[in-house]
Amino acid sequence: MKYRQFGNTDLKVSEIGFGTWAIGGSANVGGVEIGWGPSDDAVSVQAIHAALDAGINFFDTADFYGLGHAETLLGNTVADRSDVLVASKVGQKIGADGKIAIDYSKEYIIAACEQSLRRLKRSHIDFHHLHVARLHHLQQGECIEAMELLQQQGKIRYWGASLITFVPEPEAAHLLALQKGHGFQLVLNLINQLAVPIMRQAASQGYGIIARMPLQFGLLTGRIKPGANFSSEDHRSYRLTPNIIQTTTDVLRTEMLPLAKQYNCSLASLALSFVLGFPEVSTVIPGIRTPQHVALNTQGLVQLSATDHAYLQALFERRWQPVMQLMQAAG
Ligand SMILES: NC(=O)c1ccc[n+]([C@@H]2O[C@H](COP(=O)([O-])OP(=O)(O)OC[C@H]3O[C@@H](n4cnc5c(N)ncnc54)[C@H](OP(=O)(O)O)[C@@H]3O)[C@@H](O)[C@H]2O)c1
Image (cartoon, rainbow, N blue to C red):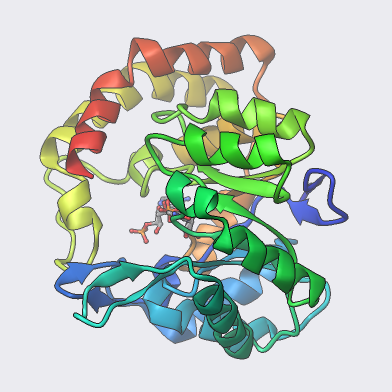
């Protein structure tokens, strides 16, 4: 495993991190599935141990994944090991009407952080995200005050924002202008490269970068074929429409498979290696559920030539736009 510096902080993070959304298990809030369907805690724990054995030291979680279950699992398994770095997120909750609510009040952020620390069994969170904060929350300012207070109190070491999938700039630009926070989480994969310009600006200002969804929910591994069925508790059942799967499969066959063959690697390794080919990225966090995922996502990574990396960047405009638009429509 290779390690990279997280921006200007003293955190040294594994190039491959562990995305814990799916191990949170099924969760339904007000009729909306917010998880990936049922998960087996025993297998999830094995996956966490396999990740530690493979040198993964960066775990990305959120208080909303499995409504706290992902944090609990992580807390029960790694607790306060000082060689493990934990990033969590705050801002989503179940509202009084039973539906998903957003709360960026100072009072809520501080109380929710205490709850996260309790579930994680840790004295501090290494990197805490504002999970879905929009520009108006940042402009209102309480969430920034809360994060700075938590940092002063030693409950979080560093903080930042997780940027919106299809419109990543506004919140990042606001924090960069104020020089607030220490890093961003953003979507970066072969299909969705919208965050590249703001990522470059942030990294040049010393912010750490966490690249999420490198496999676009598994689509970029080639394992999701036309006709695929997802459990109704898996958010992919409404996000990955037949049209998206078919259009992706065509691009994988014509553009990605030949390159994977040339590098003698899997499509998953090609997708991860593409993201790691951006020097601005500190860590890339595939969603991991099993020890097999750990092996597949840590072995076989390749160093793409500058020409091939530029070619894959160019495909964003040339080939992936139809898939991007379909995804934006699916939400
Ligand atoms: N707003 C936010 O802050 C936000 C939003 C989304 C995600 N995240 C974070 O980013 C992490 C990663 O994102 P993600 O889970 O959505 O997407 P992802 O990494 O693009 O896809 C993960 C899924 O791909 C499949 N997979 C993983 N490795 C594979 C491999 N080598 N070969 C074949 N299939 C493989 C698995 O599906 P199967 O289990 O079906 O095999 C896995 O659940 C999350 O866990 C979470 O920590 C944050």
